[in-house]
Image 1 (cartoon, helix red, strand yellow):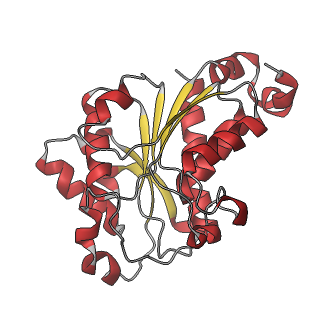
Image 2 (cartoon, one colour):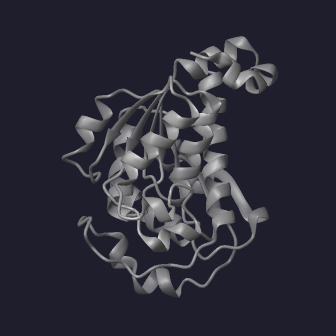
Image 3 (spheres, helix red, strand yellow):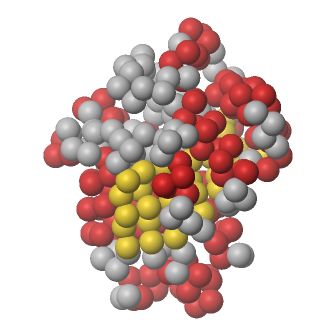
Length: 246
C-alpha cells in the first residue's frame, strides 16, 4: 500500500491506529446520499476492504445530494460507480460489490462476509429493520442512519442510542418495529436529527417505508446535500473511531 497517500491521517492518528484501519473491513449498505459520503470518507481514510451493497441505479434527481451522482453516472449501477471512485482514491483498497436488495433471504450471504463494521444507510423501513435485527442478534459492530430528509439545521444532528432518540419520525417507526421483534434498542447506535419537521409526508406514505419491493416508486421527501453529507461523515467518523479502539 502507498502509505504516503494517508500521511496526514497517520500524522494525527499514529502508525498503530492506521494499521488497524488498513486491515479493516467495512460494509456499507446503501450507496445513496448518506452512504455515498460515508464511503468517500472511509476510502480517503485508508480502509483496506470495503463491501458495497446496493441494488439501484443513479437517477438525475440524485444529483442534488449524492456525491456519486453526476451527469456522467446517470443510469449506472451505484455499486459499480462507488467501486470506481474508491479505487481512484485508493487503488490498494479491496472492493467487493453486492448488487442486491437486503431482506431475510440475502442477509445470510452478506453477513457471511464477516465485516469488522457495518454502516446501515438504507432508506426502506422493512429492509432496515431486517438488517438491524440481524446485526444485533449476531453481535456485529454497526451504526445506522435515521432520517435526514426534511431537515435543514446541522446543529440538531445527534449521535445516540436508538432508544434515546427524539423527534425523528423514521426512528420512531423503527423503534416500534424492533420492539415487537424483541430487539434491544440500547444496543443500536444511530445518527439522527432532533429538528422538528413536518411529519405529514412520513405519516401519509409510511406504508412505502415498509415495501420489500425494490421497484416500488416512493414519493420523494425533500432533502439537502449539506445535511445528508453530515450524516454520512459523522457515521464514517464513528466507524473509524470504533475500528481504531477495537
